[in-house]
Image (cartoon, rainbow, N blue to C red):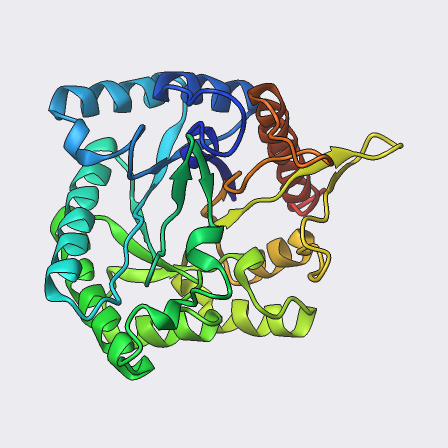
Length: 316
């Protein structure tokens, strides 16, 4: 298993500091020991509208010269709208991201079923305006049934799988809310589409049940469909110098990545885990932290998961 750095972490919207350029992110990933780069398919790093063939060739060359690879291109799509024009715009973007992935040598495009997006206010990102309890996802189109949305999503996933076949990249559906309720939803959608070009991105932190039995059931059921995964959060060193995850949500347990990695080995998964810092990064006084603290998190995250992977290696 390998570890990639997701460019969303350096967009300049989660912390007090500028976005890093793609070349700087590649160098940061190399210096911290990452194996690859996950490219977010939007500005400032990966919107295909901004990248002509010369720019794509330069990006691929930068990554390869650093001894890395582009592990995944991440779409920020919503396939659940009842408005055909909305879905068609989303499909067009996913098709162009599949083309971009092929140009960069990436083998995976990560998909959402329905991504609500983020709001940028005064240069900083917030989820609150789109995820507040007073604005639930279901209220966007209150006349729609869940089955309506399911069929919209499934129809688009079928087309997206066709784009994957066209460009030779696998589409990986992530277990991310709001439309996706739990891992079984993505499993069912992938089974119903029934294409070798549509597989699964099962992320442990996105699971609604984190007890070991539930996580084991998910991993073993997904099995060979598992194609990509993420880890996130924040990290710190304890008094003994060991790296430990910080608790960010006191209503949820910290994900047990050691257990999850063991299950991934059991199902034969040998792909990537992408690290993402994709939440407002604040200190105990709720003040935005700076980019140097982001650098430290990127380094600690790589060391943390790398240590778990190494500890579980054969002969260790």
